[in-house]
Image (tube, rainbow, N blue to C red):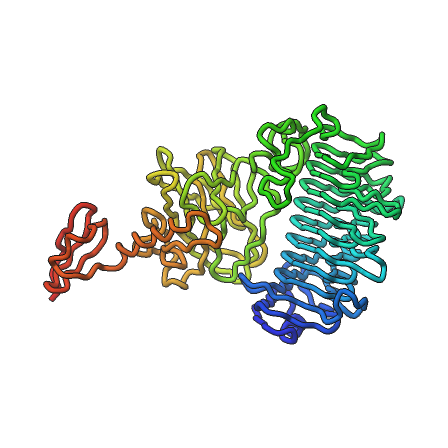
Length: 590
């Protein structure tokens, strides 16, 4: 059941009345709360309780306490398992911004912006299997302790098997990430910078140990970035980019991370931690003799990584230049998506490895799966070289077999959906790949188009199951077309029956066929799209075909007789159709 709310009272009531499979959708606006919001109703192992923002909106949960007023009666506490909270801005808590406490295992916090809270921004306090995904936590500070306890993201207590991916933590009084007394978490595609601005804050980017024998550690950290965490305030912390925090009996693995200009970039000692393919620049390292290290920048003779830029606002920030000595200098590690041999650091030079995890796309009706939102293997590359694409680029499947693009879906409105895959295929002939969705496989043939900048569409229908699932396109023996995006629409929304249709030649116009798009075949420019005029021009051409030209008989030769374009002479009633070169008479209106 989906319940849409627009006030704080409606939000709290809807969550309290929810349960497994319930979806609470919050419209944009400010949701003011004067005390703690305790979430005591959850889902179950098969159906989460989902609390999320409406598509394209950013509801703001703002607490009355404010950052300068420490009070436990503030923030959001999830006391039950199987709850997903997605898409909110959360601020001004007098305690933690949002946290999983009590029995909050198997909780997912996703796409949250948490800031200006009095202690931690985002926290898991001792629960297993908790996920933080694509969250920001910044500017949290506890003035009563001069920043000592105000971490951005905190996965602590006797917690196990958590996942932190695609998150960012900056300008927090203490550490960016603190995994104290917790074990076996995966941290990937995360960033930390400028943490530790309090007078007693430790100022680590990633604090990965516990300082307690027999508790904590065992984490896998890869493709993360830490810079500008330099605090050294006599709190027994070096202000490190990545720090083992005294963990001495549960080794930590750190692969393909980049640290720049921290107090110490990498600090590991006491046990056989593993560090491979990492880059340190400007901060130095402190590595003990027990540590297993290989192909890190400090193990190589070249000390300058040759970054394209050290400007955090530049596109090439901490990315390797073409001439970097670290390209191809790595060794094999258990991480998917790296080149063979891998480059050093968090980013592969050719862009094949994502810098962040793919977002979850909510499907509660019409949905667009952009190429840039897909999780891609190393041989399914996001590119921008050919004009006419939507969004941030298109996927080029560079291997005839095993190139995969996957979209993570959260389906709250299951059923039969029309799909429309927008693609270009400037090759010598049609190409066939597989589309997989929740165990079902469909062969998708991409017919040849007039060039790699000439976009067409493959359409059809597919059954979309409820809950978390994946839609994937994979090459199975032939290269596929370049895929720009996939549009999903429930059958019946546009009067179609879902049977397979061919789409128009340019992928944007023509009379809508069964299985066509929500916009009846017309293209809608994406916000920030390059060459936004291209889909609009495609629409104009499509309109010429879809809408009859009505004018006098004598004016007929002033119009282009485009294929399928209909001309009605208003004075004589004669009907013509264009074939690309001339008008042919069809008949005469009575």
